[in-house]
Amino acid sequence: MDNTPSTPGKFKMEKGSYFHRPRWHTSLAKLAFWSFVFLGLMFIFFFRTPSIPSPSSLPTDHSRRSLRTYNNFGAAWEKRVRSSARIRSPNGVSVLVTGAAGFVGTHVSAALKRRGDGVLGLDNFNDYYDPSLKRARQALLERTGVFIVEGDINDVDLLKKLFEIVAFTHVMHLAAQAGVRYAMENPGSYVHSNIAGFVNLLEVCKSMNPQPAIVWASSSSVYGLNTKVPFSERDRTDQPASLYAATKKAGEEIAHTYNHIYGLSLTGLRFFTVYGPWGRPDMAYFFFTRDILKGKSIPIFEAANHGTVARDFTYIDDIVRGCLGALDTAEKSTGSGGKKTGPAQLRVFNLGNTSPVPVSELVSILERLLKVKAERNIMKLPRNGDVQFTHANISYAQSEFGYKPKTDLQNGLKKFVQWYINYYSDGKKADQ
Image (cartoon, rainbow, N blue to C red; front, side, top):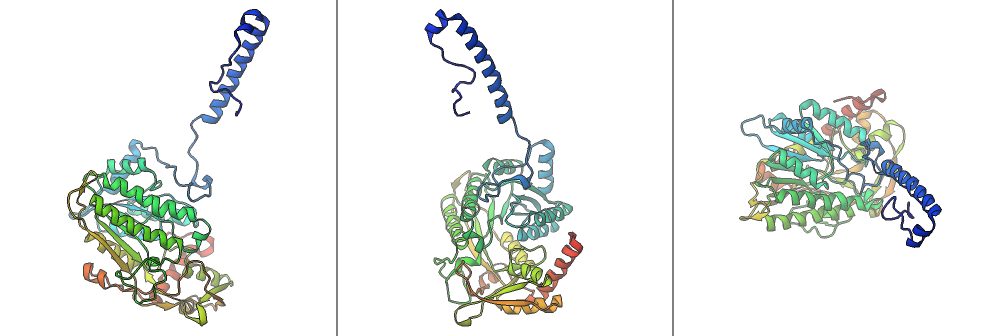
C-alpha cells in the first residue's frame, strides 16, 4: 500500500504515449481498471466500519487501551442513563461516579443509590487486575439500579454527552490508575489516568452551567517520605516516594488551579489503605488471604534495622461514610460556563482509621480467621515506592462532617474473609 498513488485508481500517463501508441493505451486502460477494482476492495476491507470489539480483545497498553467508548448513544442507552441518574428522594442529588466498577466506587455508588440519590457510573473496565471482578461488581450495582457506562474519562465527547443528558449536581471522581509498585512497570498509565484523565474531567466540568461540585480521590501516598506522625493535612507533601504518589500530588495542585481560575468546588480525599469485601486483588490483605489458603509463602517486609512496617488500615464502610460526608458538605461551584464569579470551596481531608497496625499483625489475624498457619518470608522493604508506615490525623474530617471510623482490623478482616470464601468457593463467583 506504500506505493499506491495518492489518488487511488488513477495513473498519470504521458501525452505522447496516449496519442501515438493506441495498443499501449488499451493495456493501460485495463491496468487502470483492475487497479481501481483492487484498490476499491482493499478500501472496503481495511476501512469499513469495524464491529465493536469485546474488552478482552483490547490491547494491553494501559495508556492507550481505554480510549475507545463502547456505547451507541441510542434512545435506549439514553433512557438507561436518565433512569439511573434519576433522583428518588426529596433532598437527593445527582452524582456521576467515575471508577464505579472499582472497589471504592462500587460501595460508594451503592450507598448513594440506597439513600435515594441519582447515580450514574462510568468505568473503562481495564485489566490492571482481573476484569471479571469488576464485571461482578457491575452486576451487583445493576441490581440496585445503577447503570455503569463503559468508557474512559479521557473521552471528551462521552463526558459532554453524559452532562448533556443529565445535569449532574456532583461528581464523585474515583477513577484512577491505582497501585504503587505497578508504576515501575507502566508509568504511562498513571499519567494517562491520574493526570490527563483528571484534567479532562475538570475541563468538561468547568464548562457546565451550572458547574458540579467535585469530590475526588487523592491518596495518603502524597505524604511520601514525611516522618512526622500522625500525618496531618497541613504537613508537607512535596517528597513523594513513588510515581503513583507524585501523580496524586499533581492532582491536588491541578485541583487548586481549576478552583482558583474557574471557581470549581473541589474536595480531595486522602484514603489510607482501604480494605474489605469486593476489594482489590493487588492489596496485601487480599493476596495474603489467597496465598495462605494455597499454602504459598507470603512476603513480610521490614524496614532498615528490622523496623516495623505498619499501615493505617481503613475499612470500606468507614471510607464510604467519609465520601458521603464530604459530598454532603461540598458547596456549590461558583463558576458559570467556564467563568469564575466568586471564591469557591477547596478542601482536602484524611480518611483513615487512626490506628496503624504492623503488617505482621495483619497476617496473625488472617491466620486465626482462616485457621491456617502462614508461611512467612521476611524480606527487606524494597525501593519500589512503598513507605514504612502510614498514620492518619482525621481531626479535620471529624470537625467538618463528623467522620469517625467504627471498624477495627479484626472485625473488618472477618467480614472480608467471609466474603472471600463465599465469592471464590468451589471456583464459583458469589454475588454477595
